[in-house]
Length: 250
Image (cartoon, rainbow, N blue to C red; front, side, top):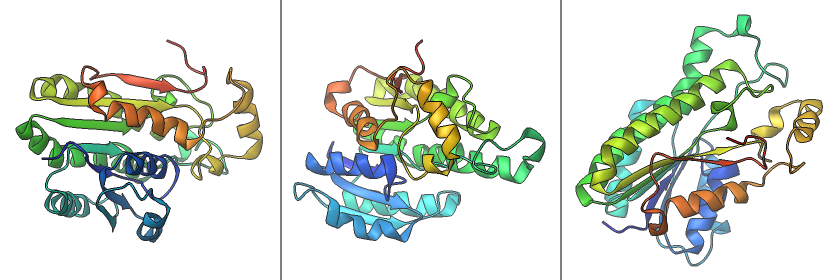
């Protein structure tokens, strides 16, 4: 299995697209997933240095679609050495956090299905073939909300992203000996379409709480992901890289 084959979820926009562009520049073979049909058009924006590039429209809230996609990726790429879990949702109520008393169980479960269950299924389907090959890189996009209280984020988002950290640490401890590293990147506020669903006044207030006094660009998050999936990060596993302009310091 080549060490430069990557499956990226949520690749049609935001952080996922930025990761795809960075890995394309370094010649990776890519399998790009998103529920948006726009995923089929982004190959035109990728570097000519990219290797093979495949796209697929898939709903990661559905286990059967994830399983079908991973099997297809393994077949087309000859194995998947890198998994980047970027797909995610952040439920909002009137552009802000959904009040606790208004969160329905089905809404709570749907948020976790996208943000936590989907990464679990991708890992379940892909990590065993990484371990068998003796090499693998998994990076999941968590959030500053997994580390601390973030006002504009809803309870279900906090919970799902914190769960992703715990799940990733368990994987890291289990598969390190097989050459598979598992890490998270926890962004603060990033200038993405998802972020812009928050009310403007909340965004402006959030900016005042960041020492850097600005939001990150998707590419700044993608830079950390690019390092973690590289051979240079071979001794980093079970870690969470906080990329937030100083908003969270531990």
